[in-house]
Length: 125
Image 1 (cartoon, rainbow, N blue to C red):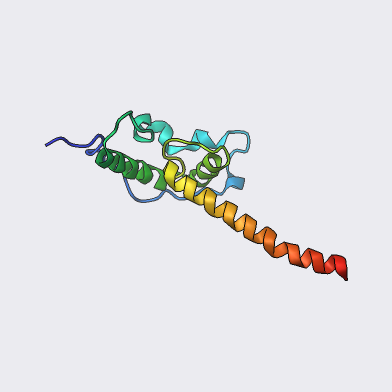
Image 2 (cartoon, one colour):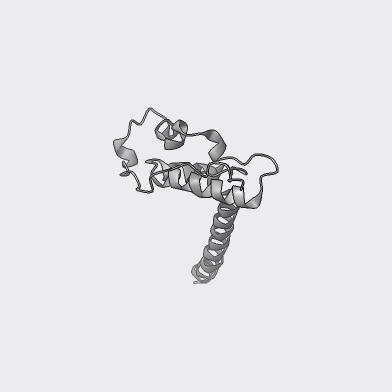
């Protein structure tokens, strides 16, 4: 039976303690502390024509690496602000990041709609 890529990879699921951003060296970019810098890059990006089962297995392994990363939040925000179209960043796949971005856009639109009547009332008063 063929094994999906990285199926033998054992990654600790225990998250590393988070170091608050203010306690880190402010001169060093956040990615210098990323756990993924020490892991196989192929774990975070899909090879061409990867079977679905292999992709899901690889993404779960990548997310376990992210879960123990001290800069996961910074990585995720970077991927959302860029926006990064491929790979696992900050514990989210590209599809999961699209969902987060859509929710943020929807929330922003709702907040703007809610603010409009208050502005109109203030202008009329």
